[in-house]
Image 1 (tube, rainbow, N blue to C red):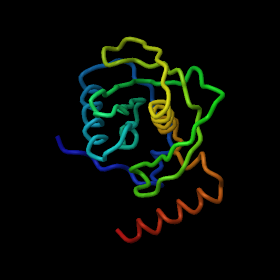
Image 2: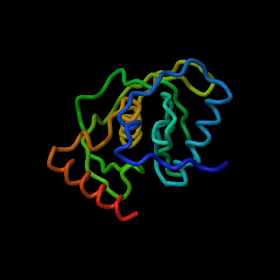
Image 3: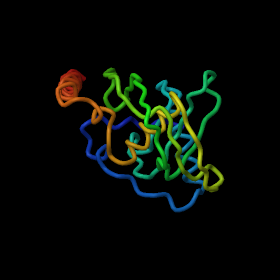
Length: 167
């Protein structure tokens, strides 16, 4: 399987809300497999489908130490978020080499369809919570830089645009 390239910011698809998935079928499973391969190759701990130009509400995560606990999600939505926040350094292959500290709820409850099409409600804490929120943001057309101060965001975007011109 060859990997699609990651979309590069400011591609408009990164700012577009993804369409819901109606059913878990062979095509959805193929997309999840491609996403997992891209995520592990990066290497990363999560990926949303629109980062590869696939405009469906699909995400994958694997924050396990051994990178051997992949989670496939369709139509993920945050149901509840903790009042306590944690800071993590986040990054994206859509803005390569430009990580930043982001503050997010330290725990969330998320609903989604699993790989069998069954509805699931699952609690996520720590890095898992950060990653699932990051991916849901992507599916809603939001990037981690949107959680930064305007000054920090402008600095990162300017640096990214400069890096893109060098390519």
